[in-house]
Length: 226
Image (cartoon, rainbow, N blue to C red; front, top):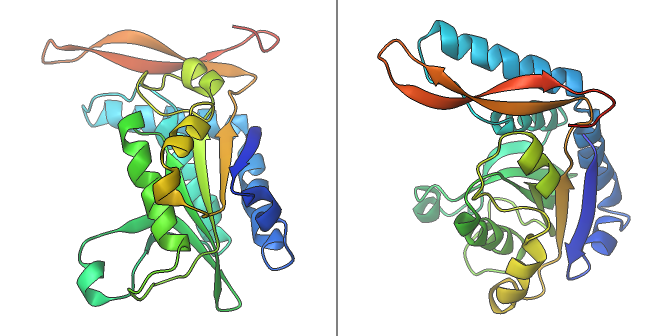
């Protein structure tokens, strides 16, 4: 997948430092390695499985993007659903990051993949602040830079995402309002771009119980235009 980058508190500069550059390049390479053929195959497979089980079909590409990122980052040794705090009293609260990376025994990046309602973005950012900032509570991993992965407006519109999700373009505004909370935590914001060869089109699906729900299907594009 293609992407755009921006940052907060010099997150990009920090990510290119000697002890972080290889992990940052690895994450970007994982995102770039997700092909449109893989996205289509995964989306159609999920829809076929739901159809066979009589379940409601999904409306957007979000689950496929999430699952492929998860599969490929874990294969590179990134920790999925990583606890923020190591203190047992905090572990039971279930405060977890989508991903964290440890290199040579030292935490490097904390990552949140954010395709949920824009009202939840503040909590995603707060988790990155807790993971990267200094704290008297023992950390499971002391990360250095936080990364937020979101859809661009183009991906949101092209691939059936909920209208209420937070987007790459909106995130700097949210961060400016949270400056007193996030402070000097360096962050990188990654916006995933829309595919060039297909889109997800909504249609009305009628189920055996007579209910009608909006569902998504792949529509191939001509010359990347829709």
